[in-house]
Image (cartoon, rainbow, N blue to C red):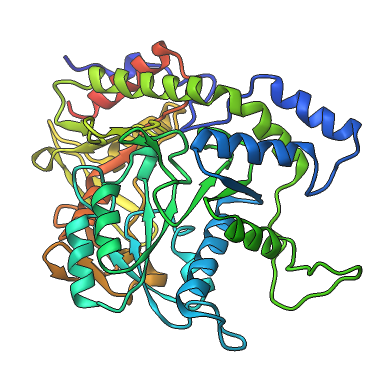
Length: 428
C-alpha cells in the first residue's frame, strides 16, 4: 500500500543519520579531568579507556590516539617498517610498495598508504557483505605476488569474510591492517572485529557506535608494537631528561577530556548495539514488499553492530539516475525509484540519509590506481559521468543502487514509520 507524501509533515526535529547518544556518565568523567587539572594528553581517563577497550575487544594492548585515522596511519607505518625495514631519508615506510586495499570505504582507510609512500591497489567488494571479496583478493595476489600488506574494512559495522581473507594473507605471507572504525562491538565467529589483523584500528568519531566526539584506538597483542605506536604518537620523544628525537613522530595522542567522554560511553556499547539492531529490523520488516533489500551479512558467522542501516534498490526497479563528480540527477518513473530520489525525499522532510561510500577506484585522486575484481584486473567506470544503470563491478553497482538510511538510535518507532512511508511513496 502506497502513501501520499502530501499527508506527511516534515519532522520538526531533524532525524539524523547517526548522532551521539549521551547518558550523563560522560560529563562526570570530563568534570573529573577538570577537577584534577588533567587537561592534557595523559591522565586517568586515557589510561582507563585503554584498559576498557582492551578488555572489551580481547586484545592485550590498546593505545589511545587522537582519531581513527591516526590509528590507521601508525598501524600502516608499523606494518611498513616490519615488512621493509627502516625507510630511506624523506621516504615513508612503504617506500613505493603496493598495498591491497578495500575499494568501498571512506578515504581515511586509504590515505595512510599514501602518507607512507605506498601505492593502493583496490580490491572489489562482494555482494554478500559489501566488503572485500576474497576471490578478488586471491586474484590480486596472482597479479601482484610481491604484495605483503592488506588494508581490510568492516563496512557499516558488518564483518568481512575475515576467516577466508586471513587464510589468503597467511598463504601469501601478508600482514593485515584491520580497519574496524565502523564496527566496534561487531563479532565474527564470536570474536571482536579489530582483533583478526596484525594491527587493528577503531574510531570514536561523533557518529560512531561509541563516541568521544573524536578519538581512536590502536589494537595489538604485542607490547613492543604498542610501545612503538605510543612513542610515535608523542612526537617520538626518547627516554632522556631533555627532548631527544631520533625519528619522525606525530602529535597523535588522545586528550584526557575526549577520553572522559569515551570512558562514560563504554558501559552503554551493548545497549547502543541493541538499539541499532532494532532500527535495522524495523526497516527490514517495514520495507517488505518493496523492490529493495537491506545491507546483507552472514548470520551464521557474523554479529554486526548495525551502525548504519542501508538498503539497495533492485536493478529492475531503478529509475534512470546519473551522477557527475558532484551532482546527481534522475528521471522519475512510475513504480521505480533510485537512491537520489529517496535521499532527496528524506531531506525535504528533514531526515538525513547518505549515499553509500563511493568506491575508491572511482575517486578522482585514486582513479589511476590498479583495481582488481574477482574476474581479474579491471578499471570499472572512470568517465566523468557515471551511468548508474550500467555499473560494471560490484562496488560501483552497490554505490549506484544503495543508500544509508537514517539510523539514529534515538529515532522513535513512530519517526521510523514515517521514514518507511516516505520510502514507499518513492515507488508509487
